[in-house]
Amino acid sequence: MIRQEQYEIWVQNGLARWDMLGCFRDLDLASTVATNHSARTRLICLTFEYGKMISQDLVREQGPVTTPFAFSSYS
Image 1 (cartoon, rainbow, N blue to C red):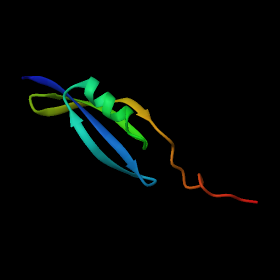
Image 2 (image 1 turned 60 degrees about the vertical axis):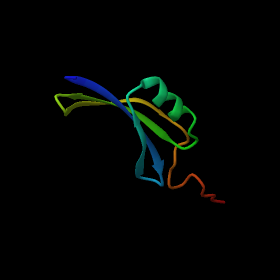
Image 3 (image 1 turned 90 degrees about the vertical axis):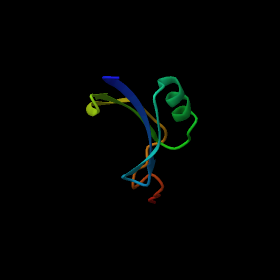
Image 4 (image 1 turned 135 degrees about the horizontal axis):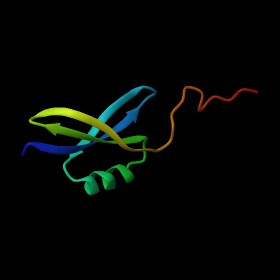
């Protein structure tokens, strides 16, 4: 196969750390897994040609936004 697409799911852990949850060849399966995850997730499409990555596109980002002051209360 000369050109192929791969879909990766990344999950935010902490304020600036993202960990890969999994990678899939099928967009429907990757989308279902990403949708059913409760943390902030990114679904990314990677396109490879002759074994080299030629593009990386954000398909969807969802979930709660984690900020340094999200849980602070000031009176």
